[in-house]
Image (cartoon, rainbow, N blue to C red):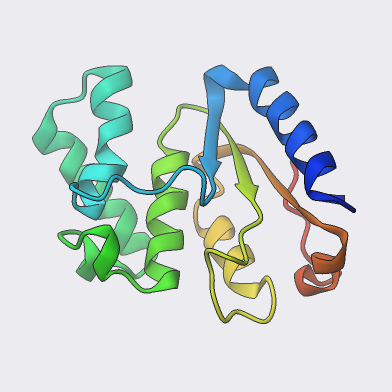
Amino acid sequence: MKFFASQGELERELLFFIASHKRRLGLVSLEAPLISNLSVWGNIALIRQYHEQMPRHQAKTYAEILLRRLGMASIAEKRNPALSSEERFCAMVLRAAMVRDAVLVLDRPFPILAGHPDGRFIKDTLQKLDDLVAEAHIFDYTWEKERYGSGMNAEG
């Protein structure tokens, strides 16, 4: 986890990190929202369809398997506006994790997870996908540090 005292400092470091990991980057950020005219499965499958020319039906099946892993199978056909904050976060994480050997970056995740008092949901979600992600990094403000708790290490 990387914590910053100012928005400018966070954004500078985030841009540098993104540039340094461009080929394997999977970004979860309000700055990179789900594509609103695609279903959740479509948003997730798009990465493998585009980068690996995975056939549509195979990419859909894979996205549905991953949604089931997170207990979110029911959202496969939903679009972004119809999602709860937890559903949106999971869809964004799965989309980001579709990059091969993903270096997952969670950019200030609490605004995405409106109403969550701590990082338990984030930790649980990442643990369920640890085989898909090579590294996970959280970029947030220093004043949010306590919300993550002492048992959460998102890097590695």
